[in-house]
Image 1 (cartoon, rainbow, N blue to C red):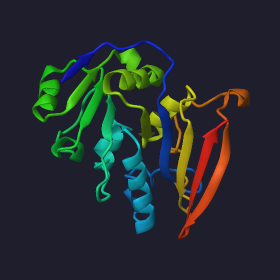
Image 2 (tube, one colour):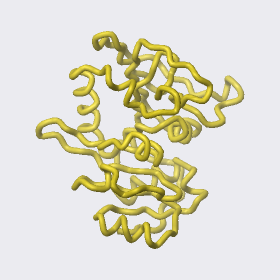
Image 3 (cartoon, rainbow, N blue to C red):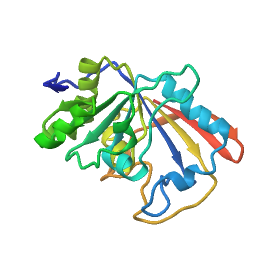
Image 4 (tube, rainbow, N blue to C red):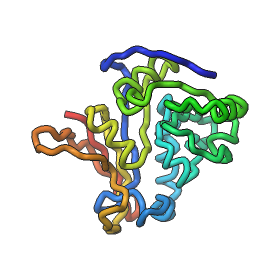
Length: 229
C-alpha cells in the first residue's frame, strides 16, 4: 500500500519514548557489531520489561541499519500481548527482504524516499506498507511523526533506534521520556555507536534537559527513566 502526502506541521499529540539498552559509557554496541552481545546478559525479567513496553505502545520505530545489523523481530511476545506497528526509516530500501520484519505476519510500514519500483513492488508483495516522502522530509522527524499520526492513527511511539536515528528525534526535542537499561560494562571506542550520535548540540543552552524519574535494579543492571522538563 502506498500513501502519499501528509500534514506539514510540527505539532503532534503523539507520546514518544526512547527505549534502549546501553553500557555504562552510553554505547549501544560492542565495536561496530550488533547490539546482541550486550543483550545476552539480560535476565528474563528484563526481557519481559521490554515486551511490556512493546505491548503498551501503538508503534515501534527503528532505522534501516538496525534491521540489517540486528535483524530484530520488534514484536510483543507476551501471552495475549499485541505487537506494535513496526515503522522502519529507510532512504534506499537496501534490504535482502529476508529480514524478520518482512517475513512474518505482523504489520510493517516502511517510510522511504526511494522511487525504486522493483523494491516497492517487492514490499507490497510481502504485504507490507510504504509511506513515500521526499528525501528532505525523511530527515525531519517532526514531519514523520505527524505523518504517522495522520495516516496510521498512531498516538504513542517507542523508538529503539541506533545513534543516528535517536539523534534525528533528539535534535527536535521530541522524546517525552527516556527509558534505559544500563549494563555495568565499559565499552569505549570513538567509532562505537552511542545512544545519541549525529552532529550533537554545540552549546549547553541548546541541549535537551530531562528530569530523573526513578531507578530500579534488575540483577546487576539498572533501569533508569527520565521525563522531559
